Length: 209
Image (cartoon, rainbow, N blue to C red; front, side, top):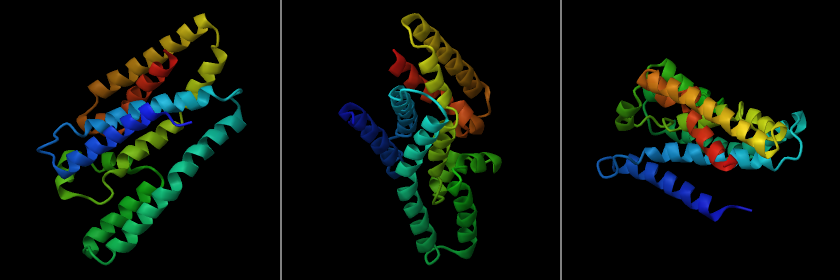
């Protein structure tokens, strides 16, 4: 069953980002909705994996299938709609950029592409690249690749004392990611999954507690 409290937090997080992009002067901290959303995602992924009786290859593949089957249909519709519509309303030069951005977005690598390009996210907000926002979904899907490790820890460390060990390991992972976030160049700390992992892990820690 869906959690009404989490659904409410997700709605507020998304709304704050939406407000930031519409009126950044009125909602200058609205972008923090992305950070909140990452924490919620970490909580939900740990909750989903905790329900699995046995973590094995089948369970992990099922986890990936459920996540991607939830994301991909609407994701594909949005990208297809953008590519087709933009062909008629933007310049050939801008369309060529869009095609390249689409290629990275289709493999959930928009954040990596923006980092490789040395893109300044805050400057681009004003330029409004059409697929600029795909970076956050890229970071989340990339985190899906490592989150089963948390599920394995949950199953192998099941007693009360072992759960404390699991929690301690999560705290250490969180600290390592945060140190990377704090010491990396701004673009890397903003865009790359490894520097955002601490936010997902905070959600996992909240679930364990």
